Length: 335
Image (cartoon, rainbow, N blue to C red; front, side):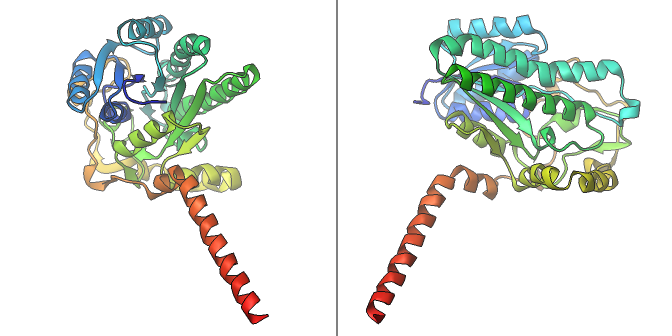
């Protein structure tokens, strides 16, 4: 695919990973539809994208509303053209023990973080399937495979997204469709969600170290959108969490029960007047980065190696060939 002038839809584009992904596509000259609830933050993201060389369209959308997502897709194709890439990223969460969660909170997190992905996928498929082309990128998480305490609603939604996406892939294979679906699983990221997530913990929430900047996630999303990868894992901690869940899930239950509370909190007490974005956007808190710049890494060597594994395999094969050639030469001379 020629990524110049491709049409890209990004949900959750007003902040964090979604906003960083919009920047990354803009650097490559894409036409980007920015979907989220808050117009003010989306307008700032639009200006940033245009300064980077892209074209951006603001479409105020609550992804928990299927009709609104479908209307957004119609507008995008009418104003920007056929959609090439659809990135599902919008999310909300609650930091709370299960015993303190409210039923309506589970409902809201599920509507946005799971059903928002379903509605976005349906809107994308409606347009991509007849053309037999296009890529859907689901922004996943290590928590889609390995749950942690205090984020049961978010973990449940991410698990559900993986199940939904796996079913869809089977159907696309059955139909012989060339529409691609990929999931990019993220590590802890320095995004504004920790400023505005609903929080019942005694101290301020934080991403579990090691922490990465959202630009690392954005590069992975861009790469996944232009490859045929089933899944992309970002950061060594993501790989360790997913593989560890396969091998020693019971030990991880015990380990996370002991460490998972403190590791998700700073030493600062929670502000009793703290606002959250569970039901309404908070544009004054929306940005690409969160509050952990000094602790966040700007690159992931694991991701670089993963995305360049074809090159590495070729180099390894060449090195092996050279060693075999020299060995054969020495044996021939000795004979």
